[in-house]
Figure 1: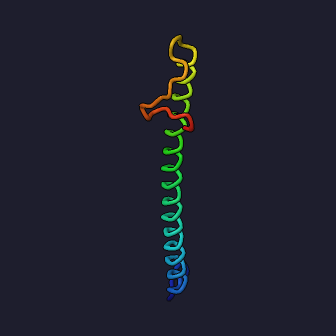
Figure 2 (figure 1 turned 180 degrees about the vertical axis):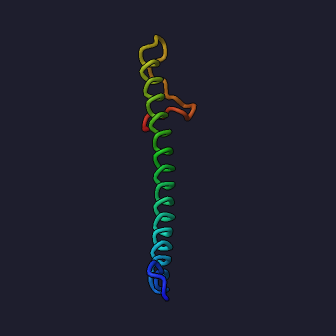
Length: 80
């Protein structure tokens, strides 16, 4: 007598292949997520540097005797 709840071998292989494909898709998505997070982090740090430099420039321009400062220390360049 055959078991009515048994799954045919072909069907089992189909499920396994589907799971493997989904695992590969998940790996690819996680790599993309990692790359996007790294890019965001890099750009956020650059944006923070720009905001700080802008604040420093504004402070320098309002401070007496510092007009025309060239920010030659390399941290706050005009085109940052």
